[in-house]
Length: 307
Image (cartoon, rainbow, N blue to C red; front, side, top):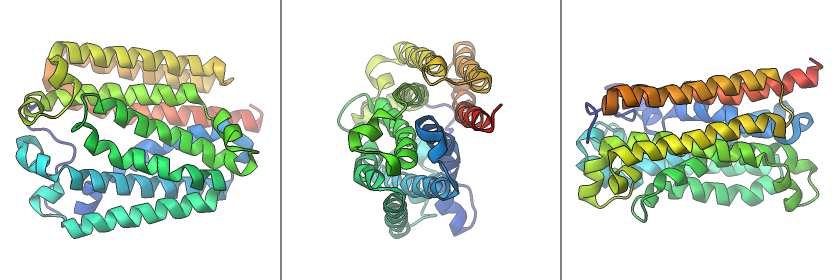
């Protein structure tokens, strides 16, 4: 099932640099960054300084670059076969395989270097987060729940931010992991898994023909949309539960309520317009990410300033 052939990874004509930026979806780094900082301020607000903040951004840029480039490499055969994804940069030749592998190598190097400069626990856990991110494209070849894998990848961004901020002050790995805001990690993971589930509806029939795993391919359109709703309902509950759990104030509460309404609105669009609404519903998540992440950060900064 296709939705007008819509694909956020499609590349129009442009420079080589533009094509590479589309390959790695540079906007995904901006989309993820608020969650890394949210994890940092929830774990140890007073630990976050300018140096740590910059290294968090560089680590995330490196990891996302490596992961997105490798995702395109691993899925090249699938993207060539799927009419919806034939406009992606590796398929059209706008980016060469050599350049894609160079992006994987450069992104990985930046990620590990940033982790090493942060603290020993960030470096210790770096391979785990790296493996989770780069193994994602293989999930659909192994099972029918790749959406949960993708959700966990973004959830680890929150974890990574927490480790980056608190790791230098921790007494042990257990101490570090104890400061991770796990409710927020779970909320982010389920939110991503939920919207990736309804996004996969567009490829439901293709995935079935190719023997690829997804919730829509396994359960069908109706049940897949219900699965997405349930994951998003759980995500909203966890987002709101994080307010009292982490002592958040009115700014965080307002931002998480707004994020929750935006998530709910996606399902209203899908209920009214069906698969044709997938692009609009999917793109709303860019706003959800900014609102849900930034609101928590601003709330904590105001607390630090005495407001």
